Picture 1 (cartoon, rainbow, N blue to C red):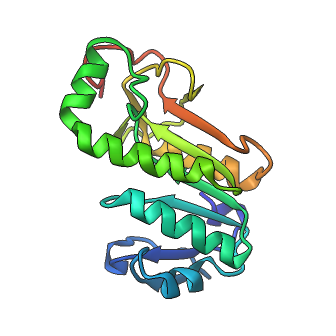
Picture 2 (tube, one colour; picture 1 turned 180 degrees about the vertical axis):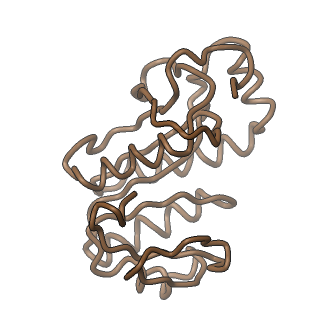
Length: 190
């Protein structure tokens, strides 16, 4: 989506063989987000950093924030997970917490806290359970609102990210839940 909008991309991944389609003109850097030297090479000169990480995400968030600040890059879009603030109500909230695990959600919450405590122009995204539906249909909730819905398409999240990149002054220092409307329930609706 972003390449189609004329954006120049730098793709940074632990395993670049997992990047299925590299857009024409994109730079590809293989490295670990916890390796500050390689991360600095990827971040240097960027207008926007999009981070969608897994694993020790609390430590990774610290590395991203500190590296961006050191490199003078201000705009960050950072993906965490739904349920990190116990904002998912009812039976679905319990199912989500049991399925993902308390410790994992706490790690994602710590990562989000690190981003929010920074001086960066961030947007934290907390997507619902992801589907492969070929659709763009989403709504957002703020951090202090109950999370709505159970699923959202990957394409919808990509569209939101593309919109944030194209309009970098929107949703600054906001933390947004992302879901497909009318997917409320006790379990994800695929």
